Amino acid sequence: YIANANGTGSIESWKLSTSPQTILTGLTNISCVRVDMDSRKIFWSQTELTVGNPSGTSISWSDMDGSNVETIVYLSTYDSIRSFDLDRVNKKIYLVADRNWDGGSNLIYHVMRCDYDGGNLQDIHNGTNTFLRSPTGLTVDASNGYVFWCDSYGLEQGAVHRCELDGSNYVQLLSTTGLVRAICAYNSELYMGGSGVLTKTDLNGENQEFLSFLQLSVVVSIDIKVEDPNA
Image 1 (spheres, helix red, strand yellow):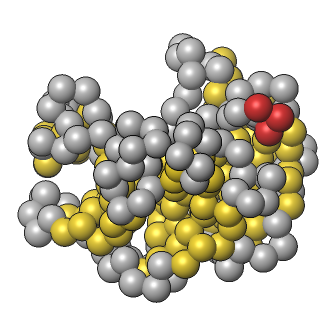
Image 2 (cartoon, rainbow, N blue to C red; image 1 turned 180 degrees about the vertical axis):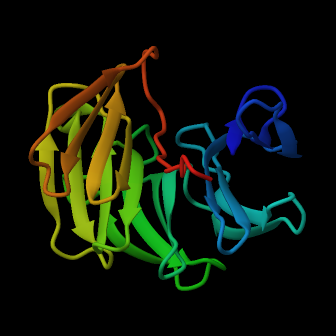
């Protein structure tokens, strides 16, 4: 599933060797899309881009064909949801959002989680801790019990962070010299992209391995799926 943030503001389904099929349209400022095939739901976030003048940011969902659209998370005092991911095991949404806190251009960032229907929203990590400066990507590894996010600004540029699903046992795993904009946990490994480079490590940030140069100036999202070659 692809989010087209330009022009139509659409979400499209796209199978290999076929033309894309528009599922939803007329969506403003889409920032992230996730799919839960077991629940047969598409999730997406929409964000307000005017820093310091929040008018709300949200996560919505629909059925796989785009029907039954419903806003399940609405943060009225936040500027944007930077990224979110699904804990498909425990049916939770994990998200990172920012809000203005001093009337100027300074933002404070929060890692939150809630149920699939938006209930039980809670803060599990926030920017009063200096290790949450400008997060751009978030990923959940429910089987190992971790949430990961990456920072892309200032002293924490290129840093990768981890905590447990309830926010406990925070640790900074990596502090790289490159820009890390996107992150994905898959099969007990952590994949990271930014500045046209794709790398991976284990879940402790060790055994880092270069994978590929990408024909993109900046990687903004990574998601990894496995296709059965015999299917």
